[in-house]
Image 1 (cartoon, rainbow, N blue to C red):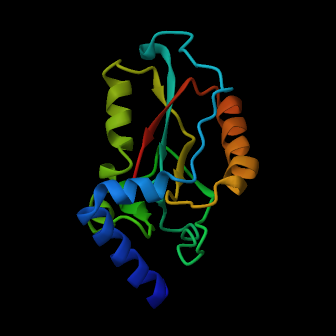
Image 2: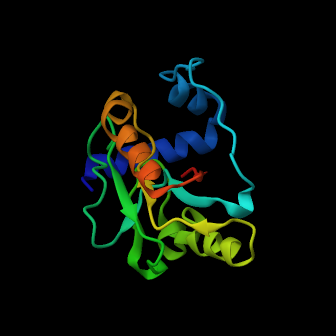
Length: 169
């Protein structure tokens, strides 16, 4: 991470902690409500569903290329995370959150072990082998909406995923 990005990260985290309402207004001012999307309902009980995790905390395998936090617009790409990964194989790359604790305990932002336990306990059908790490804080979402979100939707459809648990960063 470049020095400029480190300073920007510290300033944004300090601003968000001390001026919460102003930070929310700034971060949400580019968002538009899309009323044309249909509501989605589960077609079967959650105890029979294949469930995937999607985290916007910048979670990825240590062996993956880190998210590009030096890109001023944000990194709209995603990383695949299999369900058989260990927490020691995961890391977090993000500019707008303090990643110290998430790097020590990835389950804070990517509760894969808890999802697998929910499957073992019969609360969900099965934990998906296709899980997604994203880097939140993308100021220009056009590329993600055009290129990456359709790929994730296609992956989920091909894997027969019924539901996804979104874990914000």
